[in-house]
Image (cartoon, rainbow, N blue to C red; front, side, top):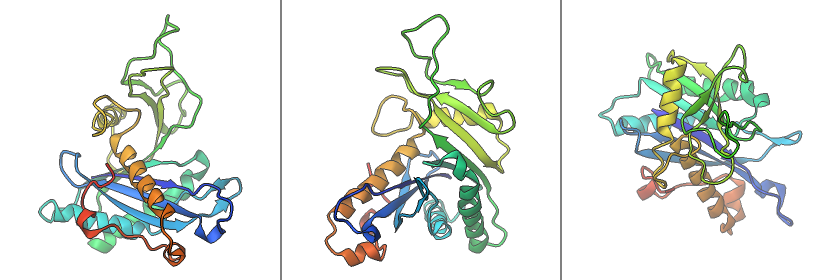
Length: 259
């Protein structure tokens, strides 16, 4: 199972009280063996600022992951996934330990509560795009590096498992590579295999016939979160927003409505 999570935050708006400024968390998971069908769970949560940044961890991750596992089993002859690969977006390095303590622990509890002997291998990866690293091919100032270029030495951490992958073919300007941090790995990935797998996922985005800058499910989590954000703009009943009530129409719950 592939799982991608992201949180979007409300922008500053004049005349809007603080309790109506909600963050929206979207968790997208694959439910097919070919990693092409996905379902999304979207939740509102209170927007809490910690210094200059906004809290990024997802409330109720245990229940969300449990629901996604049940949906996976429903679509795969009651079989649960043996491996779960998580791509987590929107997390800064200062929040790595907090995210692991809260979200990874919640996922592990969801597995044990679903079935005491159920312990799938989990790989937890953070994807970062906000950095200043750029790559240029040797001997050329006007070209980008080839799609699929990986850098995992020299400029990466000397003890931790991280790498840069430039998966897209830049159309205009200098291509920005994505930075991947493998924070937890139960599946014993070899670095080359994980890098290649990640690169393949960048070719599976259904809105584009080219490779994109980071794995396709990451885009899907963005789309689901922003779809919910746009919906909140037109909600006139403030009680629904204050109570964090947010539901997807039953006819769309197991569909890729965010595309």
